[in-house]
Each structure stands twice: as C-alpha cells, then as structure tokens.
Length: 219
Image 1 (cartoon, rainbow, N blue to C red):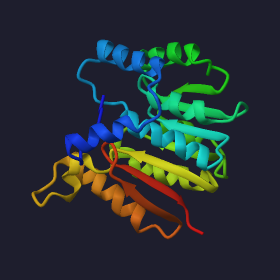
Image 2: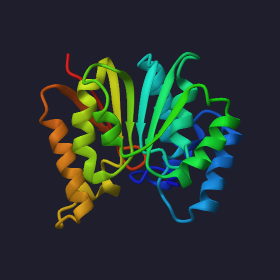
Image 3: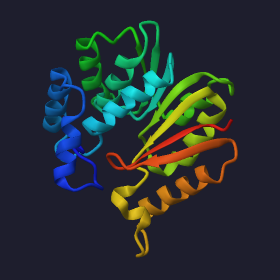
C-alpha cells in the first residue's frame, strides 16, 4: 500500500500523515490483512488520499457513488462511510478473491446496506446503464489502459456538481520525465491530455498519493 505521497520529502510526508483524522483501527487492520494476502501489491490508496476521498464525497453532497476497481476495499470504505445513511456505492471489480476480503471488512464496518458489488468488467457494467446523470461521485482505480473509456462512460452519467476522482495519474512523476516513457506512462499521459482537452469538463491534478485527477462538469 502506498503510505505516503511520491512527490514530497519524508519529513513533510510524516507531518501530513499526522494531520489525517485519527487512525481507524479497522482500516489499519485491513492494511495488515492486504499485506498478508497480497504481499507486494501496491493497489490501495494511501491514508491521506483516503482522507481526501472522504472530504470530496462530503463536500459534493454525494448520495450515489461508483467505484471502478475495488481490490480489498480500503477506498470503498472511505467513500461509503462518507455517504449519508441512504447513500449507495456501486463497486465494480473482476476479482472474487480480493473483493471477498473487501466484503468481510464492509460487514465489520456496518456498510453492507450501502455497498453493492458487481463482479464484471467495469465497462460492461457501465454500458448496461442509461446514459443519463446517475452518480454524484466516481472513483477510478482500475485498468489503466481503459482510463479514457471509463472517463467517456462516466461523464454523461455524472450529475451536475458531481466529481470524478482518478487515481495514479502522475505515475510516480514519470508523466513529466524527459526520457521516453514506458507503455503505462504513455497511457496515463494520453488520458491526462484527453481530459484536459475536453470542453465538457473542468479538471486538475492533486499531487497526493500517486496523483489524483479531479474532474467535474464544466459550468
């Protein structure tokens, strides 16, 4: 799990981490369980990014949310806990193994009534939905090669004032490197350029975790 930002010095990282809301013992346990069942997998958001997701959900007044890429459930817990009691989060993932861990922790967090899991490719799940405003908040942390397709599927389904948050959009700083990029970096650069050129939306990138892109419909 990425514990700190990739872009700040360690001293400042420690200070920022200390400013996040008091640690949630359940999330700390989930981090430990993820490290046990998926050693070396760096697929969850950092605590400070999780804190930002919480704030974004609350600030947007979201009641309906969707997550593309759930893994073991850290970000989904952050999002679902910030929804109102009648709010709903739809989680899209293809791994029954990893999401089984997520389900156990959703239950322990008392969130099973707020979260629906669909085990299918996210683009298939989205394609089956009406192309109309459905979601107040979306978090994308799935197959990087499909980021542009996710974006194009989510924009027409975003409510006015809604937010799309997209993880890993700075590739540990490689998006700005002068040397020829690897294939993954090329994909992320293409996605960032696609979003920036789209007149339908306003966007920026926050250098937290591995870079979080924030997108909303243009006024």
